Amino acid sequence: MARRLTAASMSLLSLLTFTACTGGDVREQPANADSSPRIVVASGQDVTGKNGIRQQLIDAWNAKEGEHGYRARLVELPGSADQQRSQLLGALQSGSAEYDVVNLDVTWIPEFADAGRIRPLGDSAVEDPKDLIKSVDRTSYWDGKRYAVPFNSDAGLLYYRKDHLVKASASRTDLRGDDVTWDGLRELLGPLDDAGIDDYEAIWTTQLAAYEGRTVNAIEAFASAESGFRLTDDDGDYVATEEQLTRGVTELRQRTQSPYLLEGSAESREAESLSAFAEGRTTFLRHWPYVYPTLHETFGENLGVARLPGKAVLGGQSLAVTSSTSEQRAAKAAELIAFLTDPDSERCLLRAGFAATRASAYEEADTAPDCRHARAYAEGPTASPTGESTGRMPPDRMADGTSYFREILRPALGAAVERPRTPLYGAVTHTITTELDALYGPPRGPGGSRPGDAEVAKSLHEALRKILPG
Figure 1 (spheres, rainbow, N blue to C red):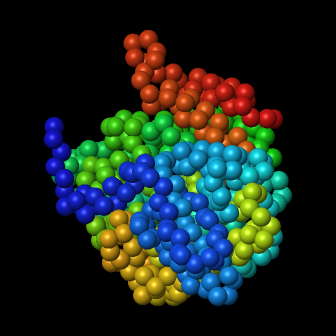
Figure 2: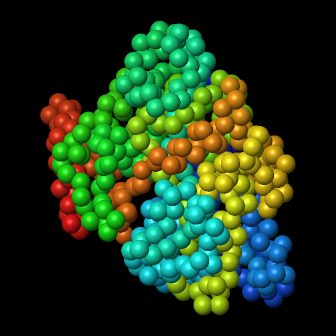
Figure 3: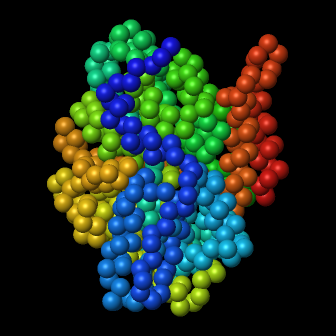
């Protein structure tokens, strides 16, 4: 049946188009004609779009060229996160690209450090390290040494439609608070089904395609089912038990089984799950903070946002200096990192829709933190996902006076759990997504049946033991 696009989904098309793009040519900023030495920064695509906040912070550094004598150039790598990781590793191993600074997903830091592709950082790369959110800054270290500085953070959030809950005569339409559980959300199945909501199909959707999104959802379920759960310790050794994994698989299956989960979510990534929520097909959505500005602009007071029930996974990117760059350039690269991650830069990133990594960014009064490094974000507007306009910023004050920055996003970062810390993370996430095909791939058992939780957990346990030490 052909699906009708609602006004809400139409207003989100630009964001969907951007987040769905995983290919294209490398986009480099043109070099100026002068002979100033360059610091080349390699990064994935900026979700705030063309001439987004990252480029504007680079421009602010370049405006101070007279103080440090260097210019920075941003190179955006195409493809998915896995493809970007492979490109960076290949380029640094072969020397085919002269990158001085790399923007790494937090899960890549142990791998790049263990392989000798990035160098330990001294104090010059971090301004006021005590201001960094502790849970976020822990991801910067490997083997007891700092290898990176947090640039922007991330944590899963729960988005929901308050108007759906009103139509369903739900007992509450504000789902903030530690008393909200997945069991409580599932109890809304009957009322929502009976409410006659246009286009509504299921309670919620998330990212369960066979990529990192599936791993994130699995770790969130595992950590929610088992207090203090970890797959690996600080040295990267495997420490989980088969019993813990069984409880985690049970929790994951309960969250993501029919009739609660939207049909097709097993093939959904960020763009597809966002589209389904925008079209009104679900009441709840698990997604990242960067979609909040657009969703708020689209739904206004009908949008709710809260911490995920249970545990959320910590994400984000951090800046590191490559081992291949010269000592002189490495010193300037560390100065650049200090600038890009200083308190003002973090306030700018927060205004642009990223989760800032510094506690001070969340302490500004009124509606939004001040931002001086990037003019487009200084007075309130932010770049659109396509870079065509700068007409909005993440609203801080909600209808009831709640601060989104301080009372929702900041606590979510502080309570989020890390994914496994190991130089073998690529193999770990591939193993998890592959083994969980038993839940989300084509049925393999007799008569189209699926294996039980204990069987799935045992297979996952054995597979992880083969690839991880300990």
